[in-house]
Image (cartoon, rainbow, N blue to C red; front, side):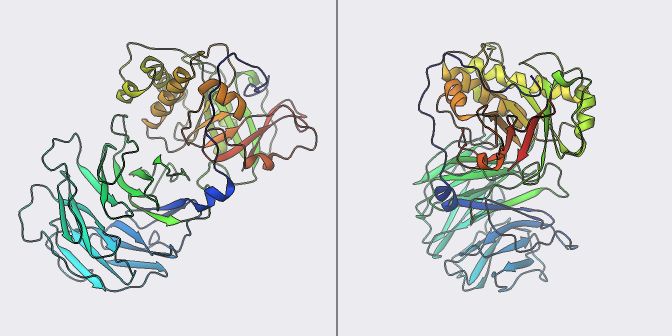
Length: 501
């Protein structure tokens, strides 16, 4: 069989009710987000609009944060010297760009009306502009740790400051709901976000640990998952039912009802330093391939016989089973894929009771399966590197019918999550799943990681095949469908074809 194995077999696994994929209407109503880099470069996701950036300008000082307007039709960027840059319908109300500051600015927040903003320095000094009132500061206090961020109450009648040790300072009508100021943290706090009610807040540490206070619910974190890059920001969804975090390479993680809309490109000019929630149209972005582009997926079965040109998509097998031998033609096939290269791992089930690489596995239903998945991912990543292949591309985990899968869907789900953790621990911004609805639920039950999805060949189509129709409504793991594989009615050359949504 050419390329990935088509999902035409069956396995005897008790199926659980799979999580329903978001409808088009529901997705369109969900929050989106922007990321900002230290040069002011803006990355827009989920249909959040791009209104401009300072990515092409020479800045006196780096950008340290951003805030969006209430209607999401604009945003402000703030630099460490307090310089303000406005885009879209965000008005300019002043800055400290030409004033000598005792300490650098580290963040900002916007008033309820949108007609003003606050900036905070690392000593907790507050600067007000527009209709932003001054409610107090820590500028004249000795702090144990520097302030790293702030959040305003929904009515604009107060604000919180958070320090690197998780100490919280509240002013105006901002209530104190708790802190980690007297707790030993593994890593420093880097940012905070408030609940829509104003009766709680979250903050995140650089290792991805999340701390929730007041009515802020805990939906999960990366605190126990190995990270190759530090987390730098957190922001909540508009309804407070979830949150996103991002590392300094723009890899976004989602929790609760926060929907994954994509991550920044793998290679950035400058590190990501902040993010902000926005109203979006529900469009996935930052895919490896431009929408409508086509190509092929290939494996060891294609050794000596590469697909014809032209092609934009080239997905290449690294290993044909978990911990298996390297695809003997990996280097040649990756060279054929060229700029369109993505890599994939064919997953088969196993356990590793001795593994300790992923501390997060202790919380999975079957820790030994999770550790095996983690080690499988690291093994494949190293084999690709040893073969001289560019590993900083999008990776896919092939989850399809195979006799090795356990009859315990929780064990299978644990292994897949371990493999996701393993690839993400290598600093990869895009890790997705290849499967299809019926087989996915048979194998892993209702497990829904919410990562990018590559829909497998359905095996029941007649010419003419229209792959675009499978880009919506066929999600199997509550994530965005970014690519569709097709063969029937179009496979006239012996290769599996692919279409970018």
